[in-house]
Image 1 (cartoon, rainbow, N blue to C red):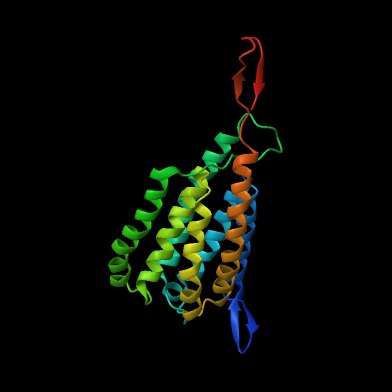
Image 2 (cartoon, rainbow, N blue to C red):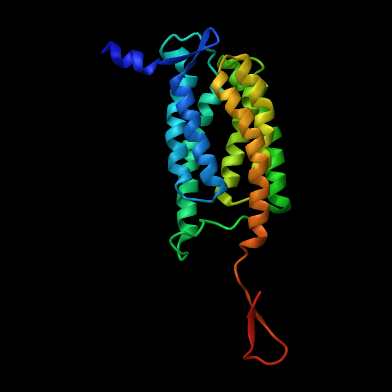
Length: 234
């Protein structure tokens, strides 16, 4: 079954080196999922899960295939985390979409609020500090804090997306700022380029959701002073 091994390790020649096709494909699915998330479509979750499964095999390649790429435990672990949280998001968005029209978006974006923002910021800092020594002990690539940062940030951003928090896009920006140089330095060029693209994309997504937060507010009936029988939707 050598052809299966060859297909699994298929690379695209680039500048004297090569890009692993699985890495490119996994990131393409990730981009499609991000586009679906911006549009608040439920299909974004299963598409993202497929990309996560593909990328999981990429970041653990050195463990299973002897590839010369660095093993990034944070990057590998975040794919497993993505799958778990994406299942939660998939269920939550499906439930939120009930009662809406067939072509309606799944959710209406909202601010995380003071408590939600504190959860995101403190979770990012405490999670990174806690996981850095763990990843280092397991042999992750230096700087290990960057690997832990991208892992924790990805977890929080995906959870924020599932909750419909506008701020989740800004968490992705923080992940991309650290993730691009980390991935480039370890030879995952396709993922590094995709992260750089995501950095601009997530800023656009933030403003798209910010606009949708006000535009898609559900109608609320308000009693007018002229009489109890007169109502208007605001």
